[in-house]
Image (tube, rainbow, N blue to C red; front, side):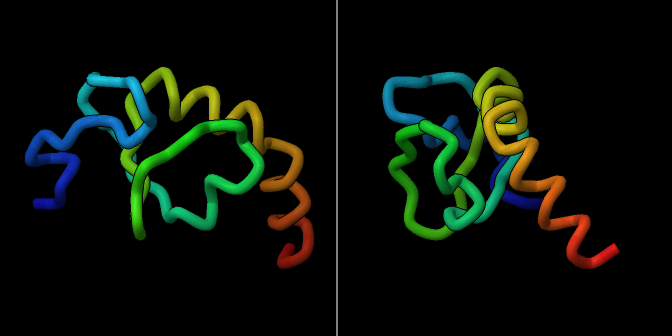
Length: 67
């Protein structure tokens, strides 16, 4: 069982919701989220949705390189 399953809070500054997903700190990139994490960033549902929307074009380009 990982940290999300144990009930860690969202890593975005000012958010107190429980996290649903974890992504690496490098994947946050230019999404506009201010994350206070060292290695892994834990995101709640709302911030994960915002991250997905902000990085959709970059993630599509990354997948196209390997496809």
